[in-house]
Length: 345
Image (cartoon, helix red, strand yellow):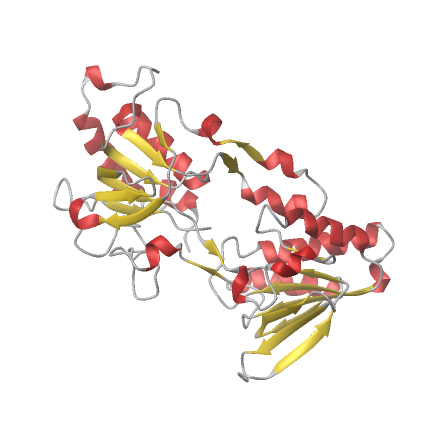
């Protein structure tokens, strides 16, 4: 999956420059943003789905080129969270409150905030539908809906989070439980997992492990902690250069890494985690824990899975070099596709 920075400054920059130049050509002097608020409309030059960091960033960029009144963001949440900081929240280095702001405060000035949830995409008619029965059309669509957390695909979750000793830095509801589990650790296995699906921020499951190890050393508990990283992958990292460096750290810090181990069940009342051996499907192992950090399975948002923009696996079907949609949703000059997707870093 593609980091946002690649959209702005990488090999996709030429494509976005075309979009920006086109937008500038469409805006006359009387259309420039003046700072006044605008009533919600049913058509926008650029429509952004999702008010996370990616959607907000692209809306701000489009505002500068086509005018704020020509851009809208569809986002249902009242509160915006800067999620990368949650690794530090889970490790006790930051407060959860520092990661959130009112969504209204991060919407670029003059850009329309449509407070609704997308329920349907209809790219053949250049429109989307929302949960308040509104139909909104667009000339260009940017999809930045993020990725869906599927805790329920692990037996015993999410209800298991009601028990102590278990947390997850991937949810605002569970990140503080990671820090509580760290503080309450006494002796035993500290287990960190990586699921058998694509994930956002693939380094985060390891980062909390390294931060936890540092915390155990600082508090004099390291000798009592058996730190285990159970990953569904076959390597610690996908790029050899970084994998080699991480292997050195793993050896130096005496961490145990088990490959092709996928978390399939949590027995929170017994403090047991069940893993499947992906090399031998059906073979399982039960490991007791004193602390468990769960990285959940993830998938495309449900609204995208069955939409016309999705590929067979449910992900938005885009060219990985340009983030343009692969299939025939055209607009403007014949060379410029009108549907873009921001990948999850």
